[in-house]
Amino acid sequence: MHTLDHRSTDLRTVDLRKVPLQPNRWKYILSVLLAQNNWRHATKSKGVSHETMEDRRQFLFRTFDFLRNHPSRPVKLDPRSFSGRHLEMLFEHYEARARKGKLSPSSLQKHHSILRTFATWIGKPDLVKPIDAYIRDPALHGRSYVATESKSWRANGVDVQEKVKEIALYDERAASAVEMMEAFGLRFKEAVMFRPNVDVLTSAQAGKDESPISHYLRLARGTKGGLLRYVPVDSPQRQQAIARAQRVAAGESESLSDPHYTLVGAIRHLRYVMEKFGITKRELGVVPHGLRHQYVADEFRARTGVAPPVEGGPKLDKDVDLAARSEISEQVGHARTQITNAYLGSSAVMRRRGLKPSDPPMT
Image 1 (cartoon, helix red, strand yellow):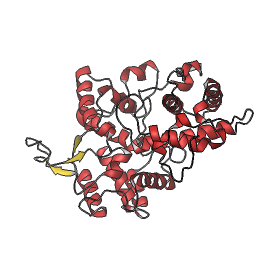
Image 2 (cartoon, rainbow, N blue to C red):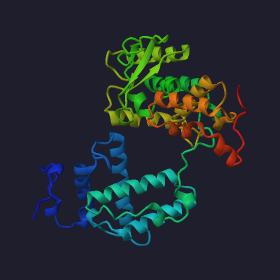
Image 3 (spheres, rainbow, N blue to C red):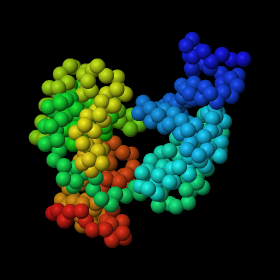
Image 4 (cartoon, rainbow, N blue to C red):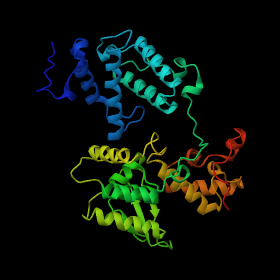
């Protein structure tokens, strides 16, 4: 019989085919499954980010703990015994939470995706059915990829620079990360990993010799899919954000994260600071990603002269609208132009839903 002495065994080398089912050691079995599979992408031949791995890990441990302590039907099971019956119990719970407004459609979709991925790890790739087989009401799980209300801090009455000043008194690195997210539309992880003394290039270094803009950010660390992009440093506000970043992370290859933290620890710390200063949906009605929404909206205004549809802008000529969206999509690191709908909204959708603009058109 295979030993489960995890003190002397590399979890990645454990052959679970030789290990009998042991419900009482579910945490260890799950740890082995994670060690051997969690780094893999669900469908592609590549790895996933540390953030994705951590999300999966936390979710799966919560899931099996919930089943074990289910309020009416507690189940003690080895994770490899996960079955359709357990899925029904979980989605019954998810549906109840969704109907109370405690679980968003995007979170439901994420739960479903992780469970489907986990099923492949235990050799049951067809176990998890489409989400509508468990939750019939599409309103509970259907995600809209077209914004119908602005998620920017400005639209929600939050002054970014005032908030940056508050945060700086507590943690200047975190304040700089927030300022970089606003100025350049950086994702959370991109801001944490940004190296201000390495990742700011001249136009010649960025391969943009003909550009009238003197400097660009080179973004590759922490980007989605490792996609490289260059973002222009084309305003006094953006130059100021760079100057602060270079001051607080003065080392040649130093990033904005505290050097005492690992990457995972740095991301956790920045999230803690955001919560400490009320940057949550519950307190101020905004999250860090709202700064990226604000950046995209500002870029749309700069290119078209009007506010985006989600902020009440008028319908534009199709070619003008598409050209602006295409440029912005590339600048924020998205391969598909249509993803800008999630930031800018769509005139057609706003009219079809009879929604009032959140701001009057800006010309």
